[in-house]
Image (tube, rainbow, N blue to C red; front, side, top):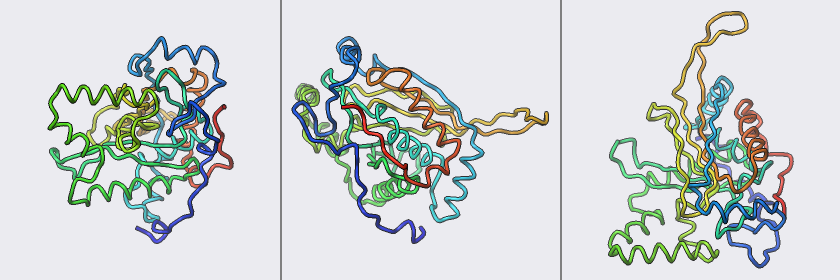
Length: 308
């Protein structure tokens, strides 16, 4: 890793969390009080995240991404790849369209005060190697290199750890020793606590269902991108599945056949947090930065904060 990768940068301000907490807010977000009445009512009709899921697919030609990844690797970011670019584009989208980072809990809509992404990470590349869910935390001012550094540090720490350190793994292992009827009671208590915003912080931190977005890569499997489900437990409003396995042959403007490489992206989103126009603008923001990833080398000029 280059010296640049090892530099410690000062703590960045987080405009998403810069507000005075009021009654009804949660530790992970503030309740939105000025949303349209229909947005307030929808969670009472569509109670579960799974029944409120919309599916969206997109594809981005990878010439610009491949050139960008090549430059980052040459600059010392050894394992930099298309996934880091995609996550950085998502973080940048939240900085401009914070509504896609909202969540529903206890039938109320909240603006999340952080950007958290979760992904399954395996100890090694062996088929039967142990795996866990790793949560990455980002700042709306983060660049692609910031995203890489955060992910590389946590993935390396997990893969090099000799003992089980992840909080979720410890909680799951403990519950395997509990009788089923007690297990059900514990889960129901956690669901009630979560709906009322009083879930213990150590559980929320470890939970694979409490985050801004989950992401999974089909590229290493060599298969098309799937539509990943959303978890009813927790408050994750978006799951992204992607694959870089697709190549096509297309005619260019000169009438010659060219081989094209595509990044296929499938989104599963919670329809209750914002309307289709807003969702579309947020996904277009991701696409814009994937088509020109060099925009991700500098922080955004300003960060937009969600409505009150």
